[in-house]
Image (tube, protein in one colour):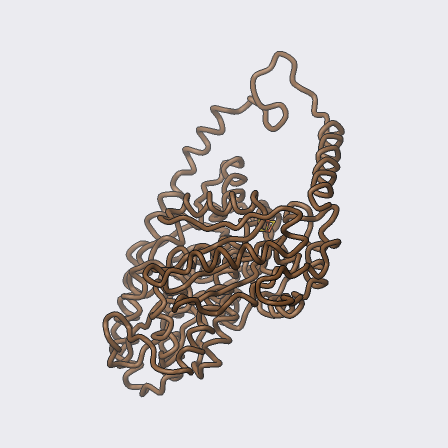
Length: 511
Ligand code: SF4
């Protein structure tokens, strides 16, 4: 779809495609996907299909993917986000972002059936962008197309690239093209890297806030606990290297610093588009991370080789840090069988640490895909007897609990809920595990105490289960004189009725 001329509405390529059902993640992706292709978004969607390959289960059950992009933008200084999408999606996304402590508003350009179908929505977005692009406040302004505007072909690529020095970045982050919120972080971080790479090619750019590092740096790809980059820097020091910025970055000028690194460590394995940007800038990208003794040993070797560090200096770092890591792991051994699952992308790294601490890890489920960056971790885990499931579904995570009967289940909210209902101690991956250091000596000692405390909670679960035994569950939960009968046919009837009603309302909205 093209603008006829500046300022005039761009009619949608395929407004009819959005009629009827299928206008949200609740009602299937196929309809929206077909509509987006008809509306000229095939190139973007084909790239997403390559970057974020779907697996045995193509839609892990996690939060709205766009949250990943939103979070990356909200954590950057002097950056503003404007969402373009259905009000219900925007409500959910802003609610979640404020729940996670965003301290600034999220912009929103609303639409109705008329502004969507006539192309007025794009004009409204352009107007909002011009209004909000204040160079005294912003380095970058990001517009995110959610599912419906992507499916209807709202052409964010036609926005100006720059308004008075404020960079304008428009991205499509539909749930039917980007499977997880983790991968949506990649979409925005890569769009920013691409923009910054073009700026570097065009001429001088701003220096890092603390000046240019005298040593070659290793860029760190993937959000991590704040102590981890410090620990990584200490391990790089004997090799004459320094830790570079973490991508996604916290401010725009760090993007230049990241592009200027000697090599990149893909600590989180799902940053496919960022990897492409770094490779286009001539940087090598190394997978895995310095976790545990084996992981740190291999990582230091790979980083040293990629940056032409002598074997003597690589060995100097290994000789200094590997014994410290080994000692830290031994100080808090973990005894027990564990299943682990999550959607952060660091699941394989955590599992490695647990195994090196002595845990019997049987299952590792990740909502993220198998990539070159996690191949080494997969092989290591499988060599230790753990089953690794990429693009894991909730059903697979729960089946693993049933199969392996762990002493501790680490997982997402519904996995933990299931485990607790079955008197199995459990821990939330996102809040309690991934919010800890994992790398080097600090990471080696960080998990043992919390894991052991959780495993030792078994007796409390048994006591609670005994206390509440006999109160029924699901439809018969509670104390009854006459235990209620389950009537699944009523539920099915209501479900069909509600779906029909929703389809009718959406069809009416689109006319
Ligand atoms: S934008 Fe997110 S919440 Fe809205 S329909 Fe798409 S995936 Fe679902």
